[in-house]
Length: 339
Image 1 (spheres, rainbow, N blue to C red):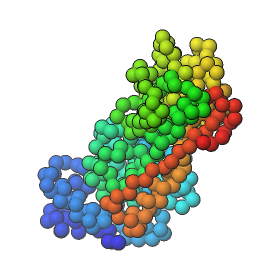
Image 2 (tube, helix red, strand yellow):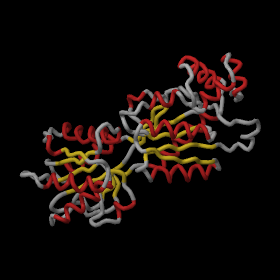
Image 3 (tube, rainbow, N blue to C red):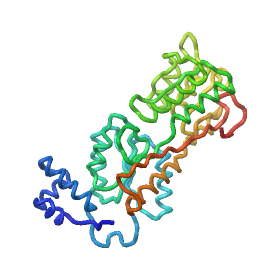
Image 4 (cartoon, rainbow, N blue to C red):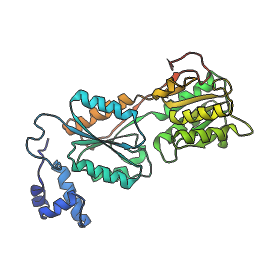
């Protein structure tokens, strides 16, 4: 593994002043684009680390940055526990979903001298590859669109989970009028879960009515509004597959407001298996996501890259499977059976 160098050595190799290197590393002042790229390329090849000093990592402890949208929770706890178990350090930050916010946070992560970053960026409109290419430290992504060009990505198998959920309603409960409350557009998790919903209908030869797919934004309020819209139609669905459990909780409230008994008058299945899903009544049938496993695998691969056991640009695309937790909201009477 190449020993990290300092900005004086980078300046010599790039034939520029140390002040120019410093401006590039801190993203300050205007530096010609070709000079900036030359400096960053040298820094990456020579394993430059912002703030590196000799002996700083002699204890073997690594500092890992974790960057996620502000509305994510369960994954954080999984990776935090693994960081503690491995006796490394964690720097955690969120961004507001915009590319500008993400770029600012990633630059901040480098400024505090993390050894690597785990990044969640499910928004298709964000240039994740472009952001990562400017980073001097390795980055492992999860829940990132497959077309983003990232070499290292670990993702939930959203399509498989959604397919199993809808198939359960079709095969076991003999339902055919199944609606969906999807997540926001141009979001990888939302798009893949919609794909699984559509695939199940295609497999069983069931036509999907366009007005049976209503968009939410993964919030409880959007679930309430979307469900209210679905049950106000002339032909009400027999079941609703909801793209996450938080929106499903909103759907519960809308059902109660209309006097509908969930599991009898209409079936509901969620996605994620958050803690609340087993506590509400009737308990929510939902797709269980292995957030802990997702975090462990992302962290494990990042540490391998940091330690030189895996290449930063090696292709590593891994999917984490999910299973259906059978509870009461789909019409079943057996709780916590895994399909």
